[in-house]
Image (cartoon, rainbow, N blue to C red; front, side):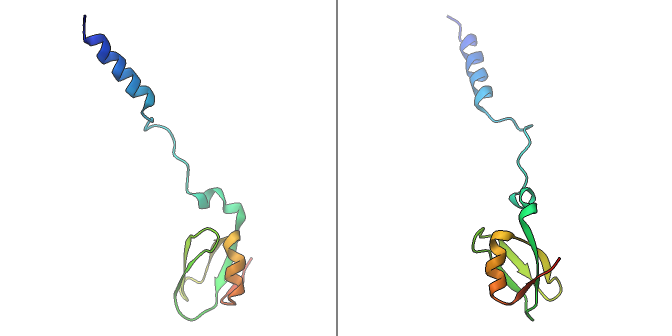
Amino acid sequence: MSCCGRRRTLVREETETTPSIDRPTPGPAENREIAHAVRLRYIGGASVLISGPATRKTYKFSPMQPSQLVDARDAMSMLRTRLFVRTP
């Protein structure tokens, strides 16, 4: 009885169950959902970090960079604070 055949079987099984490194990985969620984004402008005076209530994504706004795309699910809550306005 030879052990070489068993070794080849084990290698084949490992290869079939191991994910390929060459497979493309999905891009970030924000790139896939860019169609559902809203541009908001921060009108406050100090820098802020906001955690989106729907997505839990962290948004950083400052007087130097007041405008950015925000997930539409988070935008409504942020607009209610009156520290943000929607821009085209």
